[in-house]
Image (tube, helix red, strand yellow):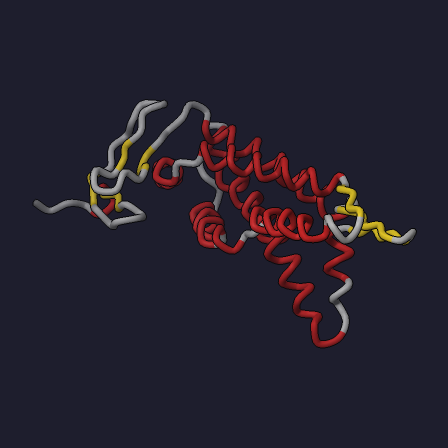
Length: 204
């Protein structure tokens, strides 16, 4: 039988092909071969993703400039923020390191939040998708592996264990903002159904 490719969905893990279908809210379609969730629409999911994206942007902006941690030893102390650390590498031949730090930890996560808001805001309000919404959502998905805010906070936790025996470390508000950001990102991802979003963009 001739099947329209637009009616098919491929499993992102094992590439098995299925005929896509609309499901009621709360139901899920999974791959019979590997169990990967393919379609998982949830009630008012677009609005939830937009709300979590706005929250993530606010947390990220605060985490950039607020103190991240303070290290004290032998009567000396030093307090720094994410932006301050990046700027410490802004001179000389290691200047590209500052660019990559801010890009991977700050710029890309903020871009993904902005792209999701741009894509889903009109859809959440029952209006047609804005121009270039498909491109914005595609870029948001393609940049996901490079947005490393979660990896950064895990690496920081490992480093704090190493520093704990050498100096007194006090965690600042930016550290806790990053911790809350990880939770917000996880909640946002739980409401994202890629096929549902693509289908909504095409239908609208």
